[in-house]
Image (cartoon, rainbow, N blue to C red; front, top):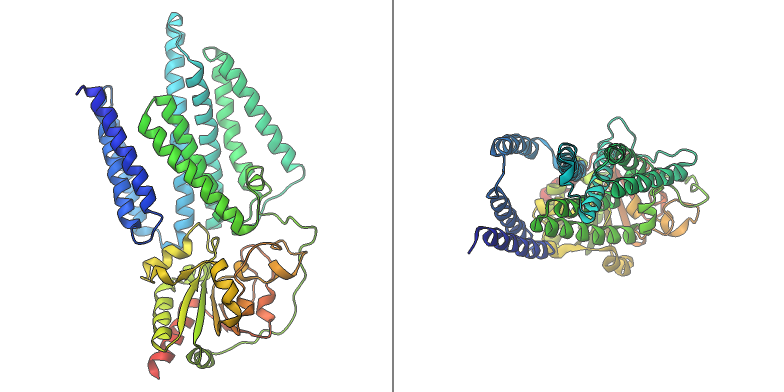
Length: 471
């Protein structure tokens, strides 16, 4: 077996492991093994690549040390509540890496052509791949940085940032990028192409910012999925630039899975993919801004809440971002176990966009060792909601807002929700009556069958646990 054959065979093995690992991630029972299988595939791919000739090991060692240090510190310092923004920034770094690969490859070839004009060897396929690598990588990086800042609420609000003729400005940016791409691809070895590529880098970064700022923080699960897909597509293009098969396969898997997840998220939000791709996503799509809901919220104490739960035979727990902020998942699991020991049927109703990233609630509940079989999606729990004795909403807001069904002027109108207002009793655990991350008031708080248990989610759930244990 020749050395080149061995490298390619290693890439094939790594690609197969990626595919099997991704498949195993679709089940909670095999997800951890799937992660390990994929990691093994990446290890094989990296080792095989390092065996290639011309590798500058000095800089690779420096990169490994720096990257390992950052990763190790992040794993210990970043709390679970900050995982959404961490995922967003990781997507951005993936896009930046692809951008730098495209830039470095062209810069090397361009310098070679300047010194040896007779050795011109730019082929059309590689030139187009380099253009796409830089373009998608730039959009992914700057868009992910904005997503990170919105989720962390640092320097920029989570609310949509809108201005007059925003769509026109984005369209102009896209037109300029296409025009510069044409100049770059037609005359790749000229000084014009070099200037065009510099402008493509700058404008792609601006387009990334412009594409994400009009998106509200409540819609970030969809944006993170889309940016994840972008990072995969950028990696695929970089693979074509480098003629690296395993990078092409890995990027394609990330890109395809990201697009599929984006469509799932869009369906859960009742949005179209075109709204995501062409900005304006997350802004109110209806003419009105919803009505101001008035009424008297009925507060309840932990002691009275216990009496309701103690008599319940069926309970639906609906977690949201408030549970993540309070880090109440372990207390919630303990409460669920006590309810089951008391004879109640307990389910955890998970909305696909609850939290700030896809699967956010699933991850938190898995961390607390909540059985995966108890997790249900809205379409499974909603038909049975009128028969549920108690629905407990823990920090969720927009995904249980009945205005999505009842108020055609609401920005949330048409969004599929979990119909907790149809349960016999709905208990909402919340610090206040403030609107959710989408900035939309919630009439659920004033429903006749709703009771408000105010306070920190972890503290109130622990108070309920204490009530059960004291009886």
